[in-house]
Image 1 (cartoon, one colour):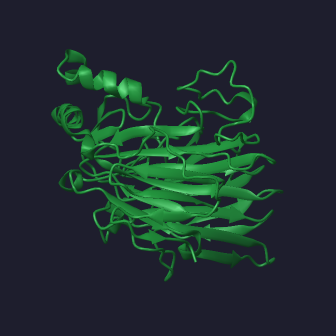
Image 2: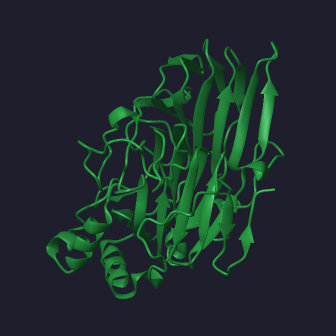
Length: 386
């Protein structure tokens, strides 16, 4: 998911030989046409060595991330009742259709014209990890794979050398509101893996471990493990070419839910790992004794245990952690590579091959009115959550 539209991508492809493309000028909402070497999780300048908190930053849209992560966005839309075309049964007047990110009335169409979401668009050079907490998402891609997932399910897609996909948010209920909440996280691939074959994986909600810890007063903290072990408990394996599949990558993607007043100590990560807590819901959270207001990223030292204490209400946070890849990052909208020349090649390849082409009759396909979750693999095999 990105703010770059399909129309803008096509314009950029047409200009692939221009000086703007050669300079890496950006069209997307991630690192915009820049070359960067990410930090390695060491204490920031001016911070005492014993201070576990490196920085506290307000959450934007998208959220700031650190190597090996490229991008993270929290979509939380309070969609109204649906219409027979699975779009909103509400006026779209005043919205910038095709680029609607304003949040009018508490929801957005994003790049969708009839149905909210992200119509067909390309990716190369990284992975998307999509955690759907509420509502349903319809996935379609150039491999021929399709899925409808939600209710805690996760899709992990290795774009590798190139894939087209769409991510639409069908509003199935015509009688009730259709809330949607999800995280989409972009995890970088190292140079040696950027051109691997695309890979489609589903992590159904019931396969994702959820550990519950109780403090001395019995207040629970629940940790859901999308990636990365916690003690001896491990989530399903990531895709085989993922940075998360490397034994010492220390990648973790966890959601943390704390009852009011709950206390829990986050165990240390490996030395040198980058680690951030994104406090996105709840009235108050104390991190290592410091009061944090909601809507902030707390960047912390990876090698330190961290005392967490919820305030008077329930608290939720997302944790992203990992050993940095430590390679140059050059991005242009939906492509993330190591050099500007590789970005130019990505556009040229997309122009020539369309990454296999688009096998669907619409740029924003929706998979019918039935709410059943499923995944249909590129080989035609279909699976459903148990």
